[in-house]
Length: 99
View 1 (cartoon, rainbow, N blue to C red):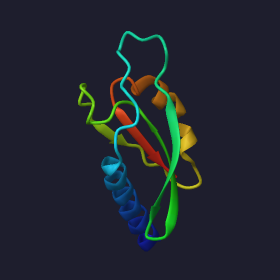
View 2 (view 1 turned 120 degrees about the horizontal axis):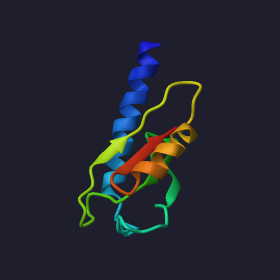
View 3 (view 1 turned 90 degrees about the vertical axis):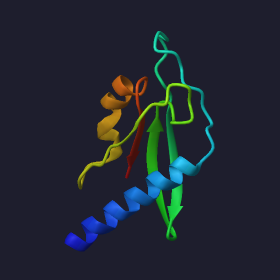
């Protein structure tokens, strides 16, 4: 059990590093915008394992310089449980929720 937890933590850290290296593909919307931030569904390969994650909000390369929040869930949950947080926080923070 402890070994599985450590593997999950290592994969989450590797995912955060991998995502930070990806070029910026979206522009941050102004805070006054009535439109919600889009949520992107992506996968990244880490040590031969495909990891699915959800991502929203401006990245650190944006003018806002938004901090990144890594949302980790437990088993048997999924990153879908964070959808309410994505809609509320994506305008202020860069959010990543791996599965």
